[in-house]
Amino acid sequence: MISYSVEKEYQGMVDAYEKAGGNRSALLGKEVAKLVIHENKVLASDGVNGIKIETKETETGVNVHFLVEEGAKIPRPVHLCFGVLPKEGLQEIILKVTAQDNSEVNVIAHCIFPNAVKVIHKMDADIEIGNNAKFDYKETHYHGEFGGIEVIPKAKIRVGKGGIWQSTFTLSQGRVGKLDYDFEVFCEDRAVAELVVKAYGKGNDDIKVWEKIHLDGIGARGLAKSRLVLSDKAKAEVKGETYGNAPFARGHVDCIELVNGTDAVARAIPIVSVTNGKAKVTHEAAIGSIDKKQVETLMARGLDENEAVDVIVKGILR
Amino acid sequence: MLEVQNLCLSFNGKSIINDLSLHVNKGEIHGVLGENGTGKTTVAYLIMGVNNYKPSAGRMIFEGQDIADLSVSQRAKKGISLAWQEPARIEGLSVRDYLMLSGNNRGVKQIERFLWMVGMEPSKYLDRDIDNTLSGGERKRIELASVLAMRPKLAILDEPDSGIDIVSLPFILNGIVEMNKQGSAVLLITHNEKVVETAHRVSVLCAGRVLRTGKPAEMSLWFKENCQKCIHINEPLEEDEKL
Image (cartoon, rainbow over all chains, first blue to last red; front, top):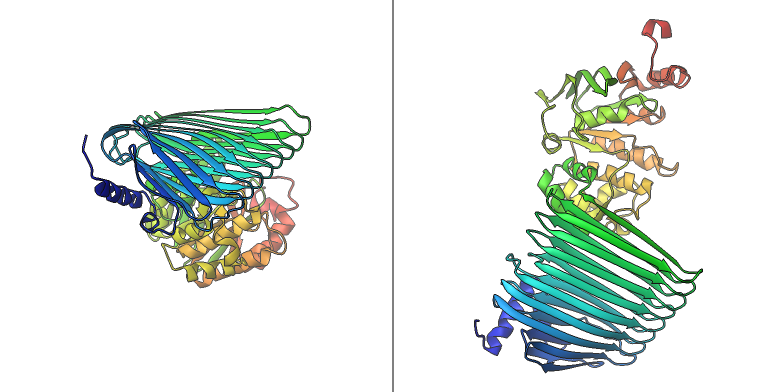
């Protein structure tokens, strides 16, 4: 394994972060809360007023406690950057998130594995969103072209009364490798949960997505949305589950999987369940090849077929 | 500019387009007027080359070249474009990006101008997606704006007025006139005799063939008196019997 000095590691992470679409200056300035972890080393950990970040390095990763204090409304997004730059490695992030009552924060996370040939990245998150708190979490992965990576993000999220959890997980740059995404949300009264997953599987990528939303409180709302595009011999299975367990709970499962080519395999399993007569949960799932009329619409504007498909794929993963 | 000669298309032994001939002159708005099921959309698809439609006989000559074997992209690159009767919805593709790619990345100011031409306020629409969140009428007006942005030599407009509310219709008609002013010839397909009043010439279609071609007012009247009252739907009587 290549050995890196901390400075070199940090520079390498910043470079890779920028390549993955991140804002380089966000990781260099002091005025923005950030956390940068390479393998099991914490390279930067800066809170701002209203945010506390505690970390503890372990043999295989880092334990993180991320706290947003009661009533704190964080004006600028918090940047997280996790990565493994060498070809091989294991990174286990144990994440505890507490967003106290009435707090608001946007978190932008980039997970970077540009050289992965045999890398495992695991995240186990335990997330508590307080009453009327709002937490927006966007995680974007950059994997390079080797496909030798296993990503296993798991989260249990509880959203208090009137709280909002919104997360978007995007893995469309480079090869997915193996993805086993498993997020489960429990919503109290008037809480809102939105889980969105977008991924582009190529080669022999293997994608498993499991989104579960329990609408346990009166008037809770949930959306489990997934957008997958598969080409070559990639395969994907998406399970979207929503449970309406309280009066006026409203939930929706929305899954689209596009298969580009003859060897890719897509599967969708929507599960909707209602245990309260006043709850309503709906689902829609569409699996199929890229719509010919969409392609021809763009071709009639002068794009060739591959360009048209590219525009459609980018749109669905946007 | 476009010369369609003796075009035929059959599905499962049933003739859909039956020895159809028409020509569209450079800079002309040419109306194609016909009742439902007369083959209007099929003609549009054949000329654009979409939906795997290929003529079983006849020729389509565009600027001196037979286009039957060209792909949709190749025809578009030669200067032909189509506004669908029911335009596709594309998730994640913004109005701005759709018009930009249609207009070969003309500036935003130009794009805004095309939206104004079809009665749409750019600030309200540029960042919206051309997906299911748009109404049918909005999507059709954006389709027209995208053809305006492309500035094709020949624009095929398949029923641009259908599904359009009475308030929006003047904007659609304005878009067609503007398109023509920009230099595009327009093949304007409709079943509405009022809409073809914007045309220079009109062909009346029945059972996949052109019954007659002439001035809009004359053709509209003829269509109204013959086709709209005709009980021989898609089975036209011989010209002599009809007249």
